[in-house]
Image 1: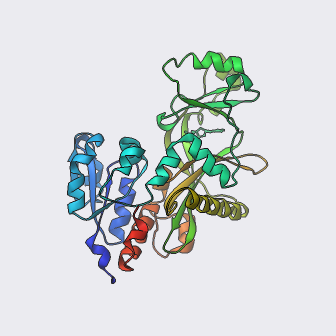
Image 2: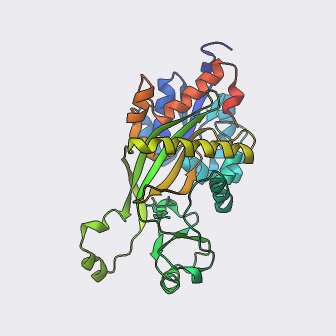
Image 3: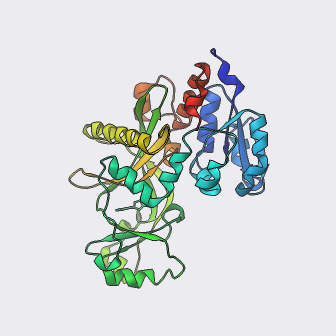
Length: 340
Ligand code: AMP
């Protein structure tokens, strides 16, 4: 254990989601990098010069065919949204290569009931869930499980409206009926390091969703005449800074989530995570989801955010923060602290 020991590790991830940022951050910290990408998607990883090595596979589901190559290269895999969604939380558990982050927490994140239990026990405010559509007595948002990026979500105001709309999706059996909160969406990007024992707020974003974010461009009458239905398909992300007086609450919320995660898994949550919420007019935070890994909204801050600017003297993206965590662990002889 000595400075520079980190160089015996490589940083690897799959080419999608936040890979550019993760690899760039790793290179900035001095690591060699590997990207595993689908044949037809190698261009960005070549063009942006962030990968020292590109391993091609036909489809992401073939990932396990090249896992041995990663093991031989002493690579640490950084999971991100696409990694978890392509492999599935069960297959992530079977990884033999080194993995940054607690794998067990992904099961809590991907199971709606467990996720809710975790967040409620963290003393967060959550939108009500309607188990029975007949109980709908306020606006609700209906979310299909496994829907990619908000595709197909719809709003209903009554049991009748729900029944009419759900008939348009005869295939869909797995959905949640959630109270619709009127307010602004806010995505808080956190980072918790087990080495420092400290929770950091890295940045915030809001999503750019079609057609929820375009509907206000036409008059209400036209929306009704044309029969436009709101949907929440994500197309991109927009940077946000939050009212400074709200920061103390946000730190406390993140800390409670980390604390609670230690009760439900060995070692608990560490690394990047995101609380996804709506803030209403009374400045109440309604958390509707947690992502227990890096989120795509952090791609806005490859050169750091207004918040990381305050704390670091180099541009600190979330991707780079991960690499720094690994580097500090390796150089301090504590690599197990960042693997799970
Ligand atoms: P999700 O797939 O859960 O991240 O939700 C997609 C989008 O739907 C969010 O970015 C919000 O704009 C909106 N949304 C989700 N849940 C709620 C809620 N309970 N109330 C209001 N809007 C919501």
